[in-house]
Length: 440
Image (cartoon, rainbow, N blue to C red; front, side, top):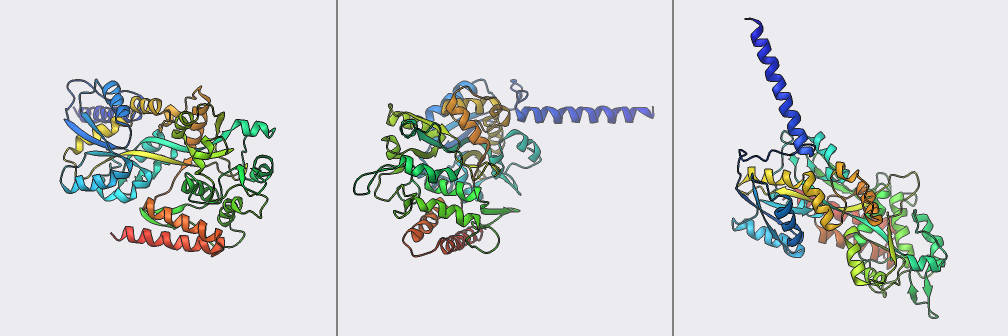
């Protein structure tokens, strides 16, 4: 008789361990989540996002058509109207249960999100499941979103321009750019640029310019925005005095040198068309754009002979890095059906859905177990590599930080400030925005 309680405890412990393992495997996608008719039915939940409605309906109607535990109603919102519509809907009590947010809108909407506790999804399981940039969604209060889409910045290059210059491949390191200018950039008799190597130096006519600057800054060791225990602070300049040897100053100075007519590196000016349009027209050798732009480039100019490569790096030994826009599915704090929203959010981060959204959008997956399977498509292969090295930073206000970056570059180009001074001012402006945000 005295042995029975011990046997009971052993059996109970064993059952608990098995259930814990099954729970982890279900989240990681290694076994399917329960889908029997005996499951709880959480009813309908509404999901808002800027992903095309046709894409999301395909996921919901085909991949999740047999799902009985929850029903997902998707509503597409235009990116430029999303924040306004979201705030108005919440104020009227008619907001969605979940939203698909890009990382640069996360901080602005943090007070509207219900974090997933680390008891529900362990931090270790999260890190084992998703690529590294997804860790932006890990906050002290919990997991504020589950990764859904990753769209990395890559380097598109015009094969005809490189071939005409008798060059076989695009640059792998930024230092190669200086020697390429004389071989590729073509000017007319008056000095006007007809063919450009790279659209660096200016701000207003450079597509994805803030992302390009972010790549150079982060590769130079800048975090742009620091996060410590959930508190955000400006990290635009690295520790220590800002001087000529500072790698961040060097990186920003490198960017501006391509728009100075007196420099051998001169390859761009503000009178030229938008860099995306110039690449579509076949007059730009290198263009830095999102992986999602690949199909658009083909549509804009079906005859353009171009390829794609991972963005250049600072050096062979430096940590490889590019910028990536990551979208995550977040649960709205004021939503009535929290349990249903949690169930739907975990379903949308599972293997079947992430594989489906990746295939439909022709983008790399956010899950480690899927991205480890190499694609045969050459462009996708580059996108996969770029997703693995993608990073971003907590942007408190995309419009305001865009203005900070623009003022930094234009104050240097106009001669009003040295790069040291411009970076210091930008750092201070970013600090002010972050302070204002955290006092709200």
